[in-house]
Image (cartoon, rainbow, N blue to C red):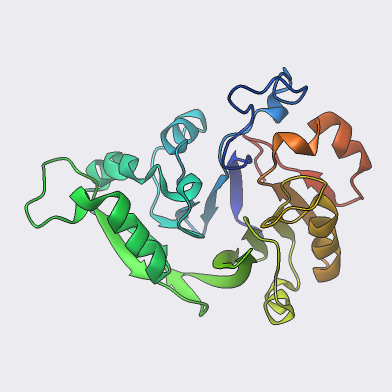
Length: 253
């Protein structure tokens, strides 16, 4: 059994369409070509998790009709992955507690720098309440659910992917050590980023992402963090090998 997964956003840091761009992808009327910033909702054994909370956080949860989450896992500290955290205020109110956030120490520092008002001794009423939990490459649990971090590289920046049961989620990566690839054995689903078809300094190409899905033997692979330079969804999907698909906003597994 794999966790329930909803793709809240499958786009790059700019999203698709890109402001001011008039390419055929940005002008497409196909909703699968309209991508908010990368994020997913996971539900497993009654635990509701969000991976990353970028600037589209509020819009994504309203669109998917998600009314509560138990915790947030953060892959890294880039703006397109943490810029929506102020909106956890709604969940602070609903659950009458601080939101549990699991991330590496340097991500905590970035959160404190972006939201200093949330960490003052004399706090303004109604500010977001964060309960920051430090994680590393060792497995940890959230309300009884085991989560296995996977070290990946975003150019020179070390970040984390996550495995829950037989599903793994990796975004913003262009390299994975062989020792970490062993954590991806026996997967039913691997979600992995590919920003475009041509080489990129900090993201997998489509061919590289497909090669990893095939190397680890995942039964199904889903491509996310897709830019407008990938091409039209309906066209590029035709050339994907069996067992590999493009994710799109709103897709549920």
